Image (cartoon, rainbow, N blue to C red; front, side, top):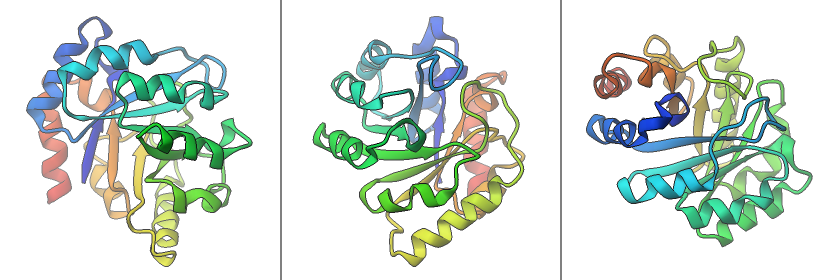
Length: 218
């Protein structure tokens, strides 16, 4: 299990504290939600924020771009210090070109899909990516509930990857991930869990991160 706390739910006036909490809790990755108020109805983090947190952590910076024309931002996020850059299949007519661009910038490539998008749309590209990010809420806002049918989708993707001998491709799950359902999500095939409000809206985020790991290991 890998845990990627989403700083979308952290205090933007004190991201250094949020990063330190992730460090102390032992989080594997830091998840950065990028929204452009076009692909989704919200506006969040850009490359300057990634650049500002890069010097204060050695954690993997996992950038999830929920934007139109994602190819226009790839190089900027790569230069800012992103380790993984994920884009949405719904946002482009040229997924293969974007994957190639991400890798040419020295980053790992991820592909994501909304809850209503069939898994079949990403299958032609999964052999070229490092991870698939399964959205289990409608992208745009944190704090939403885990959508029905998500378990089956994760399980179906896991089976497909195994059948295609693509076990190296990680399944990342983002949306409604909480302490009460994280074990179930992992059992369905998730490798990486993204959690935002479930961590940063608690009294002690560091302890909450450790609780996630304890449940994942049980």
